[in-house]
Length: 74
Image 1 (cartoon, rainbow, N blue to C red):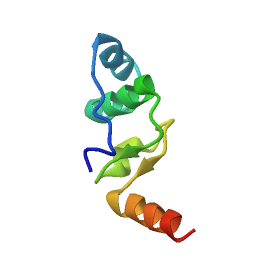
Image 2 (image 1 turned 90 degrees about the vertical axis):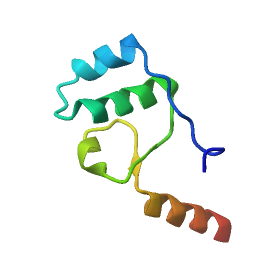
Image 3 (image 1 turned 180 degrees about the vertical axis):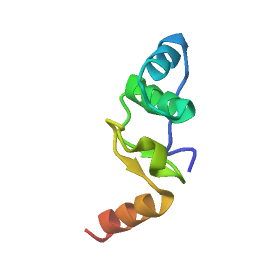
């Protein structure tokens, strides 16, 4: 799994964006803006409740595995 994922660096700019985002959960905001800063396609999480206003699609592990299975069938 780690070969297919990117661990985003978090810097001051990401933290400031998260802090000023108005999102209720700061940690989720950090993840969102870290992903935005890296130009990622998707955020993978076990708890998508804090990502409802994410500009990047958010998937659960089950959703990801289902999409990968569908791609392999095509």
